Image 1 (spheres, rainbow, N blue to C red):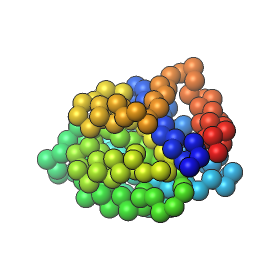
Image 2 (cartoon, rainbow, N blue to C red; image 1 turned 180 degrees about the vertical axis):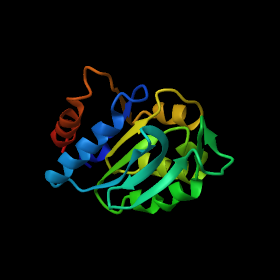
Image 3 (cartoon, rainbow, N blue to C red; image 1 turned 45 degrees about the vertical axis):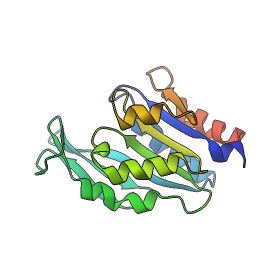
Image 4 (cartoon, rainbow, N blue to C red; image 1 turned 30 degrees about the horizontal axis):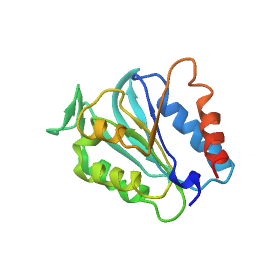
Length: 177
């Protein structure tokens, strides 16, 4: 098995540092180079210039709102309530079916309300597929457990490295093929 197949990379850093932008740019470049890829990224939902929620956008074109200030849910992070069923609806689209790269943006507090999400991530992190994801800078429980896995390499995103990271990640993956 090539080193590329074993690679598990996690981006972390403070909120708003650019992790999702890196993931989106990386995915666009990877597709342009013919790298098989599946997974999802998150996007903010804004109304009147204010963030009111988040949606998941799968790399196969699905979009689901999974967190919003106007949801009714017992699962809450700050002012955002989480729709676990919406998150779990996209999980089949991220399960590896062959040698594709799996992308998950992000492994965070909202997503970790779902036991199915955590089980799916755990399977992917132990599968032979390469993995690129983002993970909360701070967090206990599952987030801490994932960061401690020996097969995971954590890359901290900051203002100095964020613009060069998509290309760096692409080269890193290709170098190890």
